[in-house]
Length: 141
Image (cartoon, rainbow, N blue to C red; front, side, top):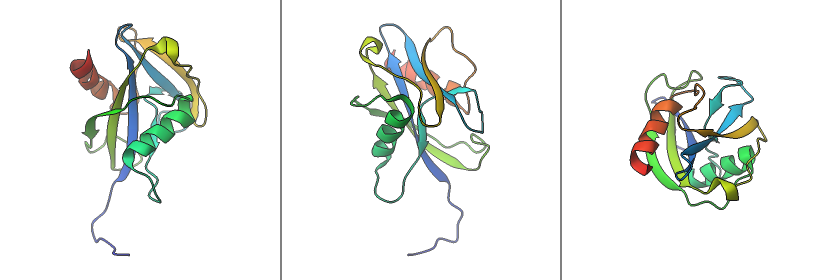
């Protein structure tokens, strides 16, 4: 295996689940640091063994909320320095437009809870998720 002399970032995937009709977003309450007990998008780290970044998004969405079989569309890549206190992290963000009445989400794995929030009643979000959510709202709503 070739070793690069340059430091490399961690790679993650996050998922913004939006119910456009009800103007709501699904968030998870984080069970681990950083931002323990804060609200965030479902998501997590890329598995380098044999996984695409979209597969990472699907796996994390299922692990943290039980939600599967949704159509994902890539929204953006978030890569600002300092966006994750654990170190340099690049996140590929996906969006799924859903009807929340057909989604039975509940927190599991490292998500303590999963809950739908109205876009006008959002809690403070972890990381740079408020900025990312604004991009999703601008594009999809």
